[in-house]
Image (cartoon, rainbow, N blue to C red; front, side, top):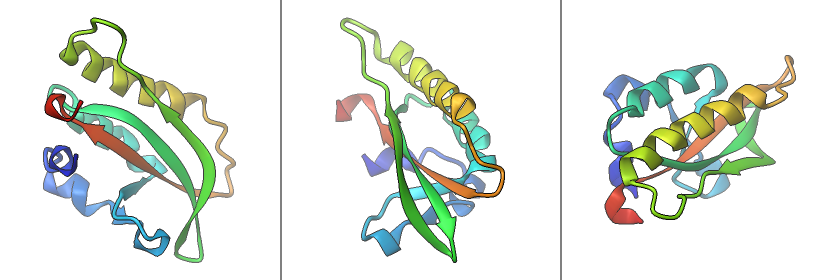
Length: 116
């Protein structure tokens, strides 16, 4: 599924960080960067399967155990699923109760049609 992340522009990738301190290779973005990430995915044939929220404290990413997922509906065309998954991510992030005094990171799980 890593090929999907390569569809993101270089500047969007550059703004991410790898969550290596958690023993994973997932990338995460600061909360305020997420709209740019999601906008870069529109029309690219990439699904956002879901995401995980982390708190950044002392330069480390700590799990908040908050997450979401977006399942494909029965007989849903892939491109419609891709578009809906981006909306699902935006809706989750809009509804999320983000404390003003916390620095949050979000990792996104991507997939392409051949991955599903």
